[in-house]
Image (cartoon, rainbow, N blue to C red; front, side, top):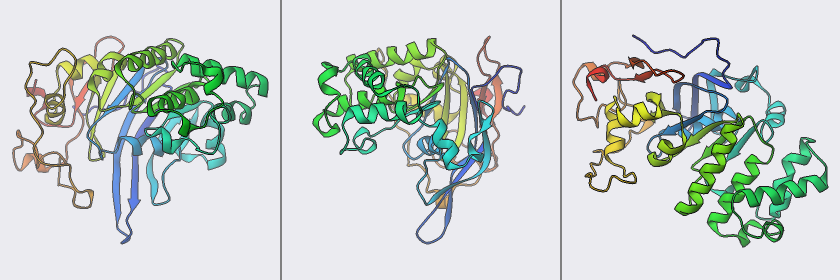
Length: 338
């Protein structure tokens, strides 16, 4: 049976349906980078989006916030957030939501932060622009936010410029910037990049505190250990499509799509040192020459033709436990793969 989005009476914080995004190349050709993505995020829950580089993870969340480059555009879908379709809003209306109701932690803090402005100026900007508090209170919140993410001597560091900080410290300052307005939804693109495991645990515990207060989280990550520790649900993407979606424990312990199985086999989690690494053969496809049917089928060791060259729907392979999403995979063999 086909697995559709859950349209039950439960109130979704964010409900994305059939999102499609394309980019225009210099030769005029248009490439579909996000191809019919659907997912939901609940208040106080975290969704991990995983997949290889180039699978469309970052483009997906940037599409929701109107942060695509000039060559990119959303061509279809809806994204309902607090009664508004983010994809239908004009830029001036999106600016009222970005930074206040939706916080964003970008992957590269040095590129995302303005090198000509102090950390204090950048931390307090959202508070002042949205009229959340006055200047004196904003500075107190900025100092507190830096302390919350583990930056020592926050009263002194808040006066620094980004280039005066280490990479890990800049990443923590970026997280503080996204959290300072206490947004309803936090989008974190590889938030634990460039920090050691001690700080990583501290940051994840801090984000867990936000979840406990009702904040929904979308976390883009390559680290399946982070997903297991922090996230409630996982969505696996490949070539702009959803390959598998389930609760975190269901997917990481019982993956059903050959691509998900390959990802788990080619990664290391704490405590799994004795397990052999089995890399996925080949490389992700060129989106200008997307394979027919399942985009993973040219690399898949389980592929059977001609069935795998036909379009694959996300099918339900297992019912989710109480309060979790159903386990779905875009593979006709998924029910037999454990």
